[in-house]
Length: 399
Image (cartoon, rainbow, N blue to C red; front, side, top):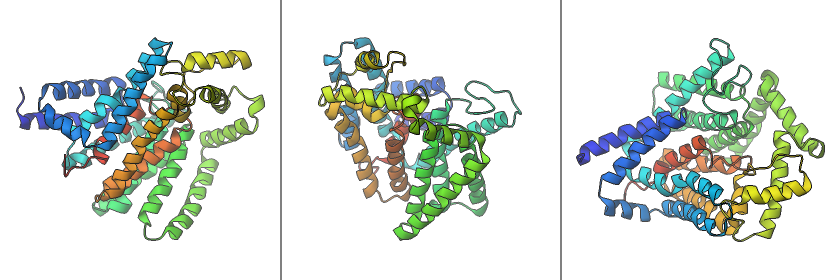
């Protein structure tokens, strides 16, 4: 068996590797997770691990959220799909507690730097595709250069990375002039990259995170923060709209889809609006416990076939809140939101400026983007949420 020193060193290497691989590859991230879980299970010291987990209200809320999905199988007819959903939720039950018990405060800058290095690598490839210096590959096209994942996910990760870099430059200020310049240039490149790719939720997240950063920087004057945000956000938006064809097209199509919903239900926005309207019928009929963990596709199909049989059915409504309400009712939604409540509570009491600020910003970003998709069902965004939660909300003084 590994000595405690070698075990901790191995865990830290694996965590840094996970931070790098998680925005790049599903297989690579899962492989590192496999080694982390196996080492954790074989390393012993279970009593201390258990005590550390039960002291954290965030971990308990996360575990309860997972357990509700398991309980929801009891009134599920489609057990196969229910088990599929439960499998997607295992990060909340096992991975978050495991990561929580092995992260160390001294290595937080290394975790973040490794993650940012991966985003930088992705961004460079995105530009190479956009400038047609390399052939498009995987998900990328010249028009929408997002190589390793869809634009729906890529822009969200990019928005979070931009916030982390700008926070380092304008708030932490613990780097030299050259590093500040390089970080600032990196943030500019990522911001420009944000508007040559088509992820609208990520673009919304970008403006939200920019506003949060401004309010955090001008924490002494909310009026000044509000005025600067009111000027800077529209200026960036209008500039991007004039410069980027894909951004202007996505803005125009989104507005058109909303205003012409009744005649244009087959658009991405139209489908989302239809999903939401029909899902609310499921929720009204099952407000407390929902239809069960696995029955959303089946129950949604009944309504869809009765009203609009020409439209595609949905496995989820592309809205995390509606999905949880439909599956598990109010008890599920309360459980889900309790995770964010405890995140805000821990961040509020944190004395570390990085943990405090990022601890506020990350849940706000997810709470916003989850209105447009089920971002805590997708691999990349769920893993990033879990990974950062493992150290942003850990009480290192008692762990």
